[in-house]
Length: 341
Image 1: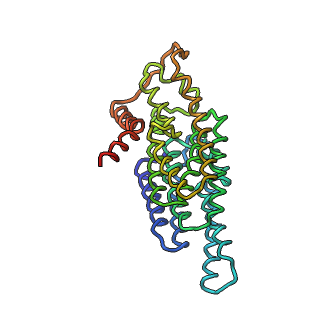
Image 2 (image 1 turned 90 degrees about the vertical axis):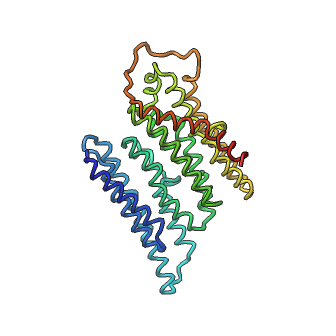
Image 3 (image 1 turned 45 degrees about the vertical axis):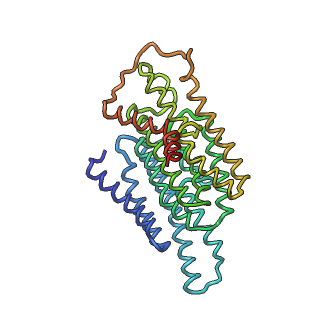
């Protein structure tokens, strides 16, 4: 594996690439930032010891290059239209740009590469892919004003994110389909306002970080590991599953807050059809989260006789507990602050 100095270098370049995209004032500049981001993320993915990660980095490279090519092509078309007065339909080019950006972010119906690729990543890489790598494409999508294509993508994303996760035993694929579902919510919040999208993105990133932090420490990759692992620490087991429910958006937890904001704004905009589909799909995602948590929350739950040795130092434990506290009681705290001031 890379030593830390090169890792830090690539992560820095990745961040710079995203910032170039977000701050650029032309499509060409945005494309350049996306390319820098892509080329610095690929070395972070490839691990010498793991064939799956090499395969994943190749899949990522191919899909992103396809999207980048389409984006560059459509931005050249736009430039031709503006500079040479060619008879090119602007909504058509905007549609091409939008589809390229949806492919980049992994939203349905361009989501097929995402769960397969997640399967080959380490948890930290998966976290970066689910959170940081979404910022640039989503910011660019917010500049485009094609409501109907966005609407189709939102509905497909929330439905596929819900149904795809139903039969999964791999935690990485489960998180991938959950990410597609959340991406649908984020795209719908982009239709209303950027500030709500930022709030949603921040909360989603925080909750994903809490879960992946735990999975990474204990190297958990499949559901059956969850049940045989936290036998001697009931607190860790309960908090982990509560974080799952929080990510799903169950009301007393923090994960419900951004969904609440989006629901409120969508009702104000009279988007009832989309909202109904989104809420139904969230109920399905909650169903499979609850199905995972169900056995752990039961009193008469069968446990293994052997005890796995758990190595978790006190700093990690305290950090996890603080984050979990905010994840579980965050909604109460924010409501208190809201009504006090």
